[in-house]
Length: 206
Image 1 (tube, helix red, strand yellow):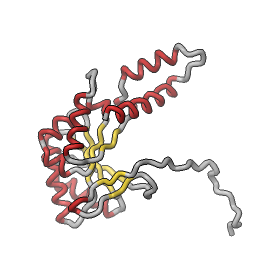
Image 2: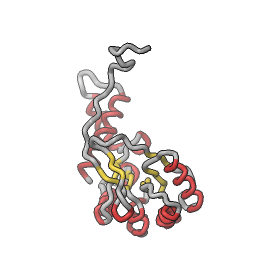
Image 3: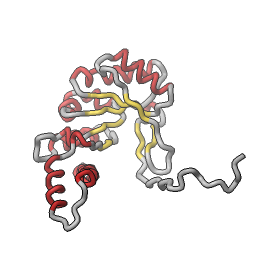
């Protein structure tokens, strides 16, 4: 038996950061899923089907939802995928599955959201990686277009940053600044700081 004063195995439990709650989905389809704030942590999964294959993506998205996924993310990287998104949503609704769909965009999201407004409306949230959206550019033009689409359709945005699409100019600048410090950090530590800076800079730009 476990004594009542038993200490937890991990005494270094982190305190959850209090964030701003955001509703994903909802509206005429019923209540959405609230992410953040004091709400329970939400389970999200991502399909690995070709999004352009409507039947396969509907089947997998429904299976994920039935298994407990409260949000389902799909890749939207081609015109065929963008055209398919509204049909995927309709197919899920016909099956009585109202799980919100998240669009994961890559290098051409600004073009797809503008060209296919039905896709922009069908998605409950946009996942944007600014490093991919504006790769090779010196401004936030493409990212800005995607934010404007989110505003137009009243959709929340998740800003995603990762190693593979980190702003190389930002990383180089931070590496140079670090090398001039009396006690420079390890390269990996600078990269972690650059990821944080990139996300915060992108949020400010948004």
